[in-house]
Image (cartoon, rainbow, N blue to C red):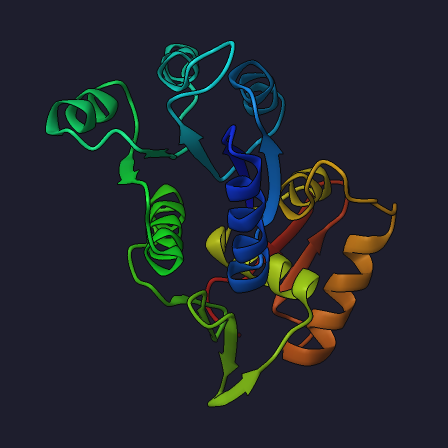
Amino acid sequence: MRVLIIEDEERLARNIARVLREAASYAVDIAVEGEDGLHLARSNPYDLILLDLMLPKVGGLEVLRALRSEGRRVPVLVLTARDRPEDIVHGLDSGSDDYLTKPFEMAELLARCRALVRRSYDRPDPVIRAGGLEIDPRRRAVRQAGREHVLPTMEYRLIEYLAMRAGQVVSKEDILEHLYDFDAERFSNVIEVYVSSLRKRFGPELIRTLRGQGYRLVEAPA
């Protein structure tokens, strides 16, 4: 999953990014100005945006309204020091999906992020079940037939993303856009390498290749 943080407090933004990468295995981009954040949000298919309201140049509510007026449905979690009830109502009515006031606990932020991502993929259950796998994003754990597997970061990102979209054909380009942040190096055959490793671990029939189209994780085991 790929997240955009639009936050002008750089230290806070870096701390949030570190937690999201380490605890949730998300790919994370950061923008410290509203204008740059809006550009990134328009240019990349994020799974979630964390948005401060008090931003230089272009304010957070302006960013939010612009995205919603363009029909972009990416979940937006507002992070702000404005804690008056009318501010919260205004933020939600402007198109945000959730609202968290500063200061906040990182554990709560993580829980809200997971919930918003699940909702966007129509996965209300905290555990993703597909293809005979049980994936618990809270623990970054993957179970198959009662055995728990600990995966390297990029393999976990891939299996989680494919499981979220189980039964759908997902293009290689789509996968790359959701697994890597803006600064990451991307190699031409890296997805094939990760898919091959996951097949060796979980079985060759779990992830199907559709030539010229992409990959599909089976919804139920054969």
